[in-house]
Image (cartoon, rainbow, N blue to C red; front, side):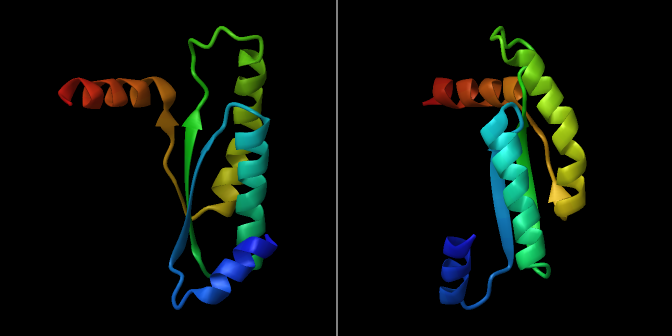
Length: 104
């Protein structure tokens, strides 16, 4: 948080924070929501936008059930500490990226 504070001191007019992160694992859900909470407490007057990517339904890894639990646990934190939260579905995101690559 100290690095964020130092960067903020160099800015003239900070309007918002935008955080794009995953909700499917410990880093995205744990660190991402913790960062949002710290930003809320340290800079309460600045708009916070969260764009979390939802866990994939067709993930066949062992951690897939853990990802679903992490998602359920962290959603209330996102709602509490962000002004706006827009969820992205990882499968839809993959489809959009595939269509963009096909047009190149």
